Length: 149
Image 1: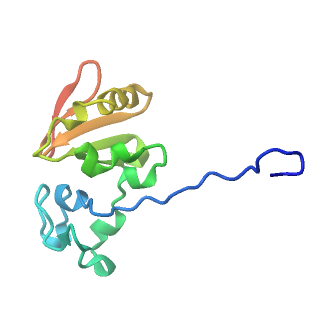
Image 2: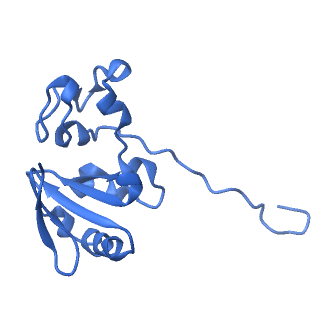
Image 3: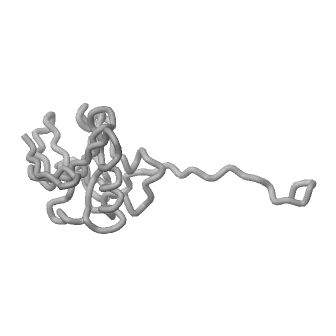
């Protein structure tokens, strides 16, 4: 207790997020340097050990940023293995890309995901694309189909 009888004020604990056993990006993202196609598990990843070549991983892997890891506002329900998709941004944050696991292509439609993604898509200057493989949709009013090139 403080001298005035009040409880001490402490700073909130910030817990750094970690991939843990997730690695969904190691399945969904293509890695040219490893000749790894998108949608196939990387041969260097295992749930029990993570990335076997992490220290020597190629540049494609080094520069990839999972938004769940980077964004404090995204709680555990947005962890890729829970949500069924990986979030990343392009074009300086002006485009949010939702990479869905092909075995769970509609998980983004569950709540709170769909409402939140649509709210983000409605923000000025923000584009939200949802992909399952090469086929996708640009969220908007109305939604429009898109394909990866």
